[in-house]
Image 1 (cartoon, rainbow, N blue to C red):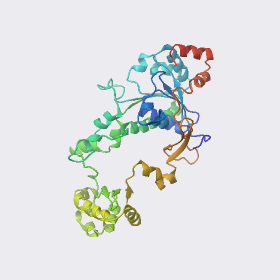
Image 2: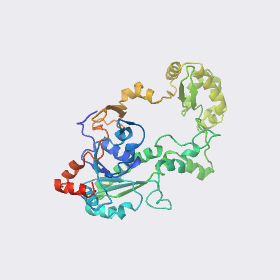
Image 3: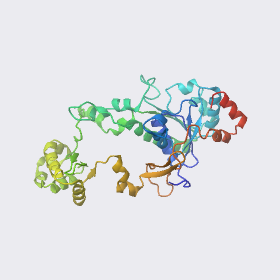
Image 4: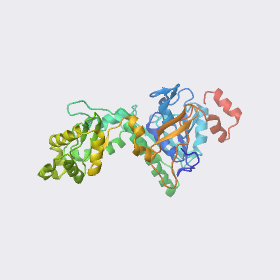
Amino acid sequence: MSTTAAGPLTGLKVIDLATLFAGPLAATMLGDFGADVIKVEHPRKPDPSRGHGPAKDGVGLWWKLLGRNKRTLTLDLSAPGGQDVLLQLAAETDVIVENFRPGTLERWGLGPEELHAVNPRLVLARVTGFGQFGPYAHRPGFGTLAEAMSGFAAITGEPDGPPTLPPFGLADSIAALATAYAVMAALAGRERTGAGQVVDLAIIEPILTVLGPQPLWYDQLGYVQPRTGNRSRNNAPRNTYRTADGHWVAVSTSAQSVAERVMRLVGRPELIEEPWFASGTTRAEHSEELDGAVGHWISRHSREEVLNGFEKAEAAVAPIHDVREVMEDPQYRALGTLAEVDDPELGPLRMQNVLFRLSETPGAIRWAGRPHGADTDEVLAGLGLSETRIAALRDQGAL
């Protein structure tokens, strides 16, 4: 962990008003590359992510990841004093990320009109389940609903099983990536125009984009992708297979040359000569035969033998890890994918590192998620508020 490297977003000021995952994770990504992120939480209702999942010594561990590289400020935006403070912050801020239901900021006198009045260069990123308009805009929205509505759940699971939801925040995480990208696009636009703008991001949309050409297939062919388990309709063999020593591996043959190498490795080179083997789509129509050939070979070898054999054959395979093996994998170790962070509350922590490596201005985890409101006085003093004024706001319940 580096505490001194100046990331490419150093000097960028971000206010994170959002709760739970998509909006806050987008702000985390900006903070990872140097942005000064101030996390605003309600004085009496901390971000719910602090209470999600396992905790150690009463401290939520998910928050340590989601809240990293953020200063924490308590502010009641429904109170006049809190609204005044936010407008003061906004005047000096580049980006605000929020995920209130549409109309909430406007009701508090903190909508785009008021925010741009104090800072015309501000980028306001609004992250909601369904967007700022339309028949569902008023509904509460979570990533689970996006995973359902987008078609993801409909194509996930075994053919004879129910639609399957992911056991983690997939849609929220995809939306966070899209939000960070949208913010950077808006900031690039500001370089040309000098003006900020509003980003309207609906969580139901980015996941639909990453699902691929399904709308195009349906529009042009009337084709509806079915559930296929671990198989693919686009290529084969593609599945998970159990090794002789009880481990699991995943095999992919998206490239024709790799498919041919796999069949030679498993001792079935004659299948390469079949007319249907010439494309991924027609290979997929013969998944049973191809899976049988690959599965039989893998079932007679240990995981180490399988991985070594595929590597020598230049064929694509990966062990199916649980988190224990992820933490020890030599490739992740080489990349520095997991970083150790010294946390004042819990001591050394290991968590995912920043998303990518930049050769000249790398990102860094400067600190893990901080306690609720830990930086309130420092942030407000930086705005020029006196100790008396801060105390008065606290007495009013605005802090």
